[in-house]
Image 1 (cartoon, helix red, strand yellow):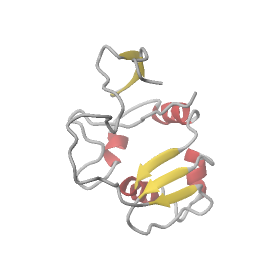
Image 2 (tube, helix red, strand yellow):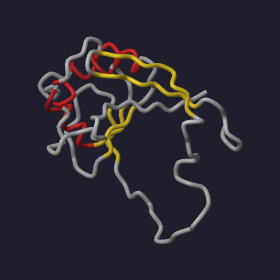
Image 3 (tube, helix red, strand yellow):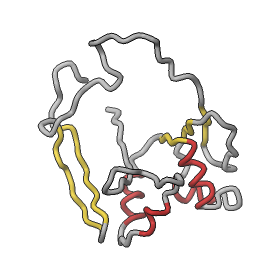
Length: 152
């Protein structure tokens, strides 16, 4: 069975990057198992996607154009799709695909029907599977607790 996982770090006030599109804040917080928890999560990933801003930050932060082996140290041969409308430099040897295109919105409103994300998940539908404290970080893992009618 294929499953989709979402892994992100979020500030208390709901941001994933600062106002300069930097992730530096993430590395300022004291923790013990940060890279271990990412490696454990990433071991079960078959493909990943990231936006252009995140890709550019990773390029600069890890100096990947000067040290392309760093990509493999973090991501191995896992294929990565980078969503962008710009031309970005590839990391030599990385399994990257740069993709772009129109989102394809139609100039109509339907009022009801099949949503982009096919279900609403409430607290009843989600089970807190794990809580890990890593000094000042907290990692919460949820799983869908029960199938809903019409979901497969």
